Image (cartoon, rainbow, N blue to C red):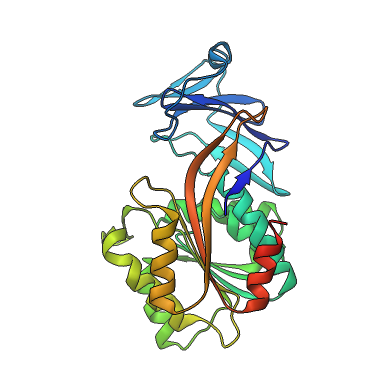
Length: 288
């Protein structure tokens, strides 16, 4: 099941190819590397208009901003130009957040545990939909950005922010006998916790899912797993969720459609362990 992010009011994939992607954020064109873009570019002339270009580092024009404000899914957010190519927003996730925003609206008051939550766009989307969100990320600076975004959207008091290694926090919550209706997992392929703990997805993913199941409420929405990695396909995520939980799973890819509809750039994958047949029907109905 391919979830597709189409051009938005303040975001669009303008072109892709030759190992790069040309995106529009607000009024600015940005070029970043993209290993999945194996084909040729359609409009090479447009690429010369970009004010921000990342190769091995950022090359910025004199009037290029370090920060760009924009709105995504009715959430005020921003992108930030730092040392690496990541800018705080992953546009391929817009379609996934849109889907689960609709799910949470049907279960207002649902307790949501958002793990590896990054700069918090999804946390704000789910809080605005009526969820009671616990946002966990090991980066203090990233969480400060997330708090700022939550405040600007009027949901700071609806989100609890935790700066801690995600697995360590989960184990504490299990001991505290806490329960959640929806658990969202977006683990990196490799990372380090706030105390230097090394995270490798191939070593920790099963444990993450097994601990997630222990935290599910009696009548849960389910467990959502997503990620970006050319090393794993959506079927792998689906299988590990099913084997580790025994729950029925739906899964697919995360893609962005080029402006003009030439093609879809595949960038990620997702899998969802459904808490009930009703939940599965809601997810399936999204495609009709």
